[in-house]
Image (cartoon, rainbow, N blue to C red; front, side, top):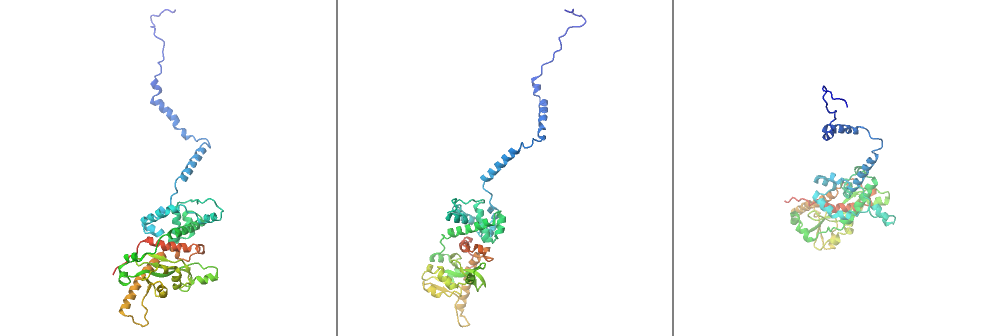
Length: 380
């Protein structure tokens, strides 16, 4: 053992202090570790590693799209009362809602006419029509075709559907409304007519039950010369279809006939239209002087009111006042017919593609005009 040197005092060998546990978790060390991981995103992932994720997201989006109802265009085009009147002829959103809530439950079961035909022929077993658009949009297509008079190509572009679909939707709704609206009673009792009769009628014609007039709609000329001859109207100087309209004094459509060929006379259409059995003894019918139907009305006990005919050149004062009053009152039926024909589908000749459906469309227009509300009368 080496002797102890008095000049070099002994001291313990150098010893390293144990690492402090808290130092391992210090903020400085954590920040350095995070800094290393912070820039990993800048490294592009290997090719194809995200393909499965993208496919999965697209699959989820497709399932979500199928689960959610598609957005309807009806809410876009009929967002106000003014738009509602323009596109559908309903006077307000409130009136339309009443109409739609009444008809929508049965309309959900609609089968497009082409599929219905295949079912009747036994060539199709599926009676549920695949519908790629909201039901209310299919009704809007019908309204735009009839009320606005839009052409098929315009509707096909607006709704991003085919021309065939536009035609199929129009024909389907025309027939559906024809059957549904056909169940509504139109003819009004004599007591109810008098209860709501305007003052002008009460003064001059208190017993009028209905005001009659005929109107014509233009149709495209058929290829058959015989049919062209039957449909030709000398009054309009073109091929037309003709219908009889009956309006109560307060402006409600209470009767309308089917459409007949344009060559039919006013008297003949009155005879075969079905209006005569509805009249009762004591009823008065107002019409234009061209309606020579006294004998038809007398057969059911009714009376015709028209401007008085006089062979002399001068009317009495009473005749003059009555003639002027009847002329003013007859405007009621003219205004109602104007409402019916404000559906712009009647602005141009009905194409041959709709000839098989024109009677149904005419029927619907005549009934639905009653949804537009009463006429306004200015009392004297």
